[in-house]
Image (cartoon, rainbow, N blue to C red; front, side):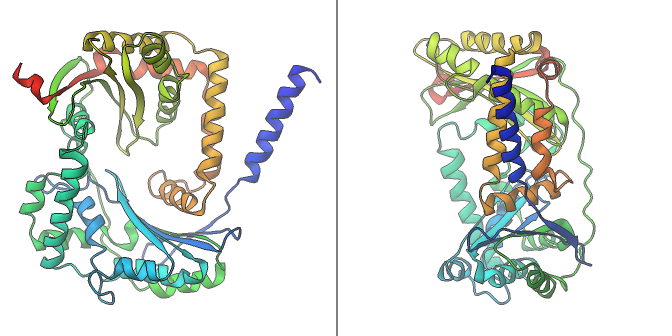
Length: 440
């Protein structure tokens, strides 16, 4: 067999494998605006019930930051029919697991149960949406929970403030300038009326998507969905009109200090487009090219060969309205920040001005093929993807066709996008320093 024939055979087998991974689903709307997505998978006796609300850290007014993250905790307090503090007990005693998470753009709640407990999962999420108990006791309790989380994950964690400082430096008008977890003074100042109003505005069926994925009977599931969610009142339409950022046209540099670190970090940050834009997919590929694995350009050069950095990386922080692109390094020994910044810029400049090799391009495509397959390897992962693709991207079927976007990205497009966003006059440099350096 010739080399070209062998390559063609491998491509055919890969394409056949990916087609076999296609996720089938059915979607429809209830009369109250709740979007429903059902996916049947009978390979394991499990089911995931999940609700994603289109509300995140950016959805707030000035002086009331962090509400979406706060609600991630608050809506586990209990409901009209669930005694306070019993939510997790109900789930675990019925063989299930549950959790929630919040970003700047959405909040996601989910349960994984044995499939014979599907109705229980639907009831729990309908209770959360229909009549959660929101009172002063719950507000006071969860304020303390959030404060402790902030202390552990941000205030007292090495480099815990880094991403927050990047947001502050890249955004001056848009709510992305403030951390997803919010400022504790804002939560302390919040009244019960503030909290109740926030719930009524955002945690409504027409601002959410329900996904049921796993070993399910579709007709029966539809009956339960209608029974548990059909009578929940529609809320007012949520409108968003966040201020636009002015373009960054001049490099700026800031210094910030962290008492929890001994090794500084040097960051080059750029403001990038929201994750629905095609350019955002290209930026994902660039970050993989620069820093994914020990053979990546930044790691091999600065860690392995030149031994200038103990750690180096590049990643694209995808968000709905704007993204953030970070390249960072932590020095070895006496290596200066200026040296690290110059070395990182050298690799970024190569992507701006030169085509990556055909071999590196093929490696990138292979990595994204593998990532695509792995993302659909579990029912819980499928449920998350279905919810996200519908709610944030407006296209549920991205779960099957997103890989085609990556496949279509050429070497020329990678260079073009790098040159578009990574010019030196469009960047912010952050010196993230140990606290003791502030006194010197």
